[in-house]
Image (cartoon, rainbow, N blue to C red; front, side, top):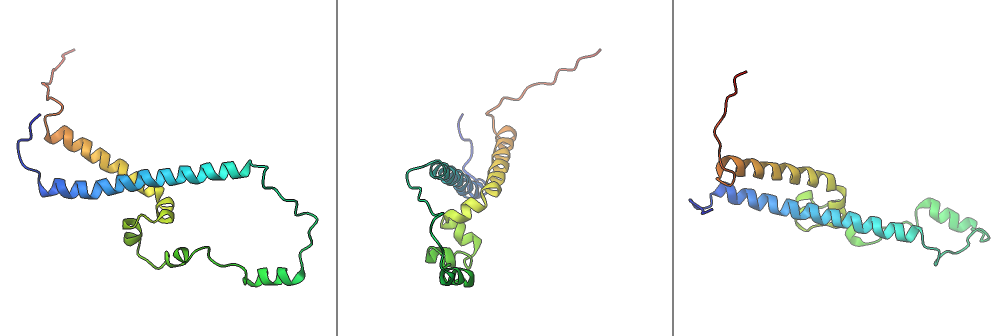
Length: 137
């Protein structure tokens, strides 16, 4: 199959829009798999178990936890992620953003693959055209 004409701007923009979406979706699926794999190993591990039933919790510690003094974000990146725009978070491949929007990325990727398939079937000679055959009963 030879290319009969140069690549059009529409084809370039489609590829520039679709390739990052598909890459982000595959990466988000990998992150989801990695998250589930690590959690299942940690749940079934008996190595690091500590008995905490006999320890008494002091009233001061309980008051600090209730007031929210001991609850801080794990990293400064987690605190600033809500203030950045979703487009910037997508371009930076923010892991939490990709995991949150995994199903949306999957839907966009599936739709773009269908559009590419329709384009290939309609506008190229990859699949040969055939003649209609009418059957009379």
